[in-house]
Image 1: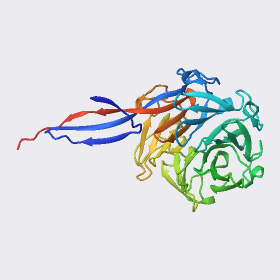
Image 2: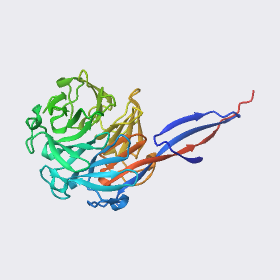
Image 3: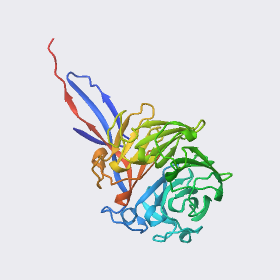
Image 4: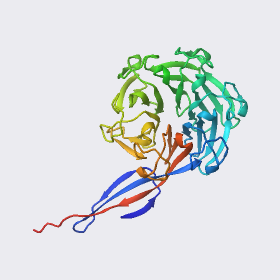
Amino acid sequence: MRLHLSPWPIAALTVACLGFAGVTHADTAVPLLHRLAGSASGERGSADGVADAARFNYPSGISLSADASVALVADAQNNIIRRVDVATGSVTTIAGTAGQRGWNDGTGPDAQFAYPSGVALAADASFALVADADNRIIRRVDVISGTVTTVAGTPGAAGSADGVGAAARFASPSAIVLAADASFALVADTDNHAIRRIDLTSGAVTTVAGSPGTSGSADGVGAAARFSSPRGVALAADASFALVADSDNHTIRRIDLASGAVTTVAGTAGQPGSTDGTAALFNFPRGIAIAPDGAALIADFSNSTIRRVDLASGAVSTLFGTAGLPGSADGAGNSALLRFPAGVAAAGERILIADTYNHSLRGNGGSITVSPQVYLPIVAR
C-alpha cells in the first residue's frame, strides 16, 4: 500500500493500468478531516479564541464566504453568532451574548437571539442573514459592526402568512441560504413544512413550495408539494434551483425555482437508513450545501456522516464518518468520526462542518491516496 498527501480535498477515484503483465493499481484519494475549532474532548462553552481554545454550544448552521476565508456559525444554544477565520481557526463573537436568550435588535452584545439555527453569509462576507428559530424571525447581521436588525417576521408571533417585513409569519425557521447576488434568500420554515422566499429589496415574503401547516411527502408544483420538517436548504450558483434536506422524510428534494416544481433527488420517504448508491437512504438529513463541482453535500444528522450526492446520476456516497458510529476522531474518509453534525458549508476547495454534538467545527484539508496493488493471474497461452 502506497500513501501520499494530495492537495485536492474531495474524494476522487483514478484507475491506472500499468504497462507490465499481471499488475494493476487503483488509486483512491481519500479526503482528510480535522478539527478547525472547538474542544477535542467535546467540552461545551462560549469562549472566543484560536482553534481548540474556542468553545461552542451545539453549533448548528454554518456558512462560508465565496473565497472560503471566513465562516459564520449559528451557535444555537449559546444564542450567539460567531465569526471564524478559516486560515487560523480564530473564533470571535460578533452578535449576541452567550447565555442571554431573547429578542433585541442592536449592536454586538446588545442584540439577542433565541436558538439561532441557520446562517447565510454574503459572498463578500459583509453581512449575514440568520434564521432565528425560536423568535420565528429572520435577522440581518452586519459582520463588521455587529449591528443586528430584523428583516422579516414578528418576534414570538408564529404563523405562515406571506407579506412584507413584519407582516410575514414563520414557524421555527431553521435554515437559510442567500443568492450569490444577495437579491433574495430562501428559508426552510421547518414547522410550516414549507420553503419561503424573501425578496431582500422589498422585504416581501412568499411561499415557494409546500402547503404551510400540512406535512407529508409529495412531489408536485408549489403548494401541491409536501415536506415534513425541512431543516436544510441550498441554492445553485445560478439560482435556477434549490435543494432541500427534507429531514423527517429522510429525503433530498429539488425545487425548480422558475416553475416551483418539486422532485425527490435521493432517499425514500419514510425509510431511514445509511445505504449508499442510487438507492440511497438517509437518517434525518439536516445541513445541505452545493459544492463548486455541482455535487450536494449533506450533514446526515442521525447517521453522524457527511454524504455526497452526484446530482447527475443520483448516486450517493459517504464522504466522512461511519453510519451508526458517532464519535470524535480526525482522519481520512470513514475513519473520521463525527457526532450528529447539523451543518455543512462548501466554497472553493473547503468543506466546513458544524459537528454539533461534539461542540466543534471540522474542516477538510488534503487527502491520502491509497494505492492497493492487485496481482492478476497470468494465463498461459
